[in-house]
Each structure stands twice: as structure tokens, then as C-alpha cells.
Length: 162
Image (cartoon, rainbow, N blue to C red; front, side, top):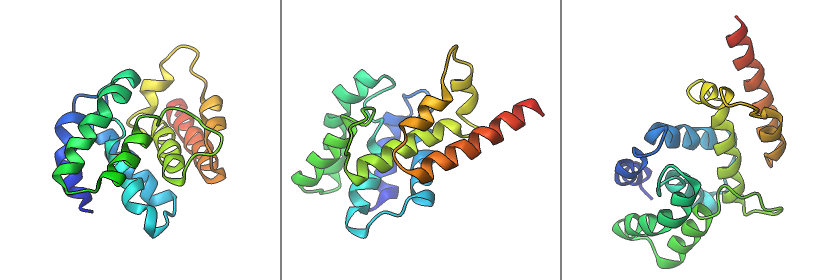
């Protein structure tokens, strides 16, 4: 799959979101840099990451509009129906926290949480009253994600406190 082409087709929709396509690219890069993805799951994992916020800014919009928009885009790329269904299932539940998610769902979830610790997004979340960074870390699936989140959190706090 041509991920650059998928990003190109998704960009007009992603730009409607709070952090725009830049957020999606950060999530994509975090996943690629931190989580080994089995070759047979790479297309599903990375397509799901690119399309995870395609429906809009709110979770409701993402769940309601995301699958239909993703379907249109993936059909343009000639993806088979079973693949499109798998991507749509992942993006229509990507904020949920099931006990045993699929590997692509787990990687998307952890990467989407890790991006919150990025210099570009940290201040947005940290400015919310009663935001609980420890809860975000606790929800992550992999030990690697939790460790990285703790390191990034310490780094962001150090930067803020000079």
C-alpha cells in the first residue's frame, strides 16, 4: 500500500481536526519508530493509524463518519472489502480500551496516547484542569509504551520547570 497516497487522500479530512494531519503523522511516526509490526499486519496497522481520526474532531464524529470516509478513500486505492471492514472496525473503536485488542488496535491505541506527550500536544492536555497523566500511562498496553511515556513526561516537566 502507498501510505503517502493514503495520507494525501486523507489530508483534507484530517485538517478539520484540532491538531490536523500533523497529529496523524506524529502518531504514524511514533508507531513506526517504537513498535515492531509483523509484515502481514503492516498495511492494516498503518492504514488504520492514518485514518483513525478521519471522521472529525470529536469521538462521536470519528466513530460515526470515520468508517464511511475511510471506505471511500480505501476504495479509491483499490483495497479489498475485507481489508476495508477491518480498518473501519479499528477506527470506529480506537478510543475504547478492550482487554485483548488486536495487534493493530493496540499499536494505534498506544501510539495515539504517546503523541499526547509530544512537545506539540503536551501543553494542550496539561492545561486541562484535573488531567491525569498517570491514568494515560496506566491505560497503555505495552511496557515499552509506558516506559516511553514516563520518560517523555519527565522530559516535558523538566522543560516546563526550566
